[in-house]
Length: 131
Image (cartoon, rainbow, N blue to C red; front, side, top):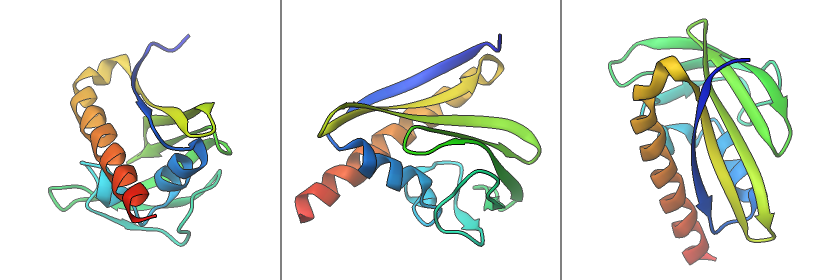
């Protein structure tokens, strides 16, 4: 069994809206602290989707989406290394829990995950205010 840590937040948003945001490569730089740009042939990821992400220090790293369970879970490899898992669990029609799953050896990445969760919450809040 793989040892992992979960960084989660309950969001006042439908699971489908959260899923759309976290699978939209155009949105990743808006909420992902370690992604400043994305180059991918597909806007919305799927199993096997590939591309590259630019890090804050300007280095481009290739990615591939490995596991993809529509509307619920996806994970990827970045630079050849197993990276973050992303899970959405519906808690009702207008609430869900978003979790980032990281290997225990990457415990320091938890700060990045917490910042990403806060950014996603803010983006969703602004989107709801526009409606």
